[in-house]
Image (cartoon, rainbow, N blue to C red):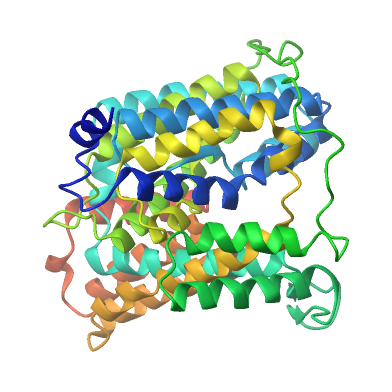
Length: 433
């Protein structure tokens, strides 16, 4: 088995080991396991069965992440994406007044379109058209974005209803205090170069949360997966040619494409996986894995699948190959049957890992040319807009459009590729459709 895994995933060539890859996969799972509860919570507001969506979420994550690991051989995990699920529930269903079956149909059609775009290398061409300095800044922006998510999950940073845009939470007790304790523990483990520091930090923080009353022990460990029959293949075909379906499809396509592209480019940059041309290796396979995951996820009964930026935590823990993704998928399989055990982990325990991953992803900023303002300004806008707009796609939009405009207005338009010009035009049109 060792020789088979080493040969298939090229572990020695990538200077990694089975142990490191498995620990990295578990770490990735721990930082994104929240989706098993958050996604059903959001989609159930449309009338979908919470327990059924839990199973559908896990199944979508398992299938798409296995594809990413075995087919694309990359250390990225996939699951129904945040933001995409909110658009599904709050815009298509609640806002536009459609049924959740209509929204599932939109997600399914989007997946089919993405399979075609990926098969004909259109998504890969779009990814490769992003300028190198912006690719590096995507990694930095995602790092700050992840850290921001961690600070929010820990209630260290709050969104008050009035007054300041952000404010400091109550850090002297409760969730915020536990997260700060976890941050110190994980920081010490990292400083001492302890293997699996992020994962060990999550476990220790979870245990400390028990006497603090934050970690709630489950009544039982084993639980059979709920049936997906109430939501399985529940499509609605009578409105597929409507204007609302077009709007829903276009928006889902746009959000999914650039959330996934951003995650792939950003995490690959941090992992040092980009090739000599600055492109993500096996990008076509990665994008096909995402597209197939979205299509099957809609069949199971959940919203659009995307590559998770939390994959950066596994990369930071040493994950370099598809074995990391396979390990994450196995954890999702276990979660189907041992959900009470995994769901007892509080957000305060995973938040320190997300915050510190933000630090790990800052390093590409050293490679960005800050002396050339036509390069530095787009890079800066990419970085700063991701956390402030709370959206990876918007950061990429500001970066690419400003890059093209600054090059044109300084008589350096020849430095911009035709593909980048086309991408910038599509980004601008997005705001008017």
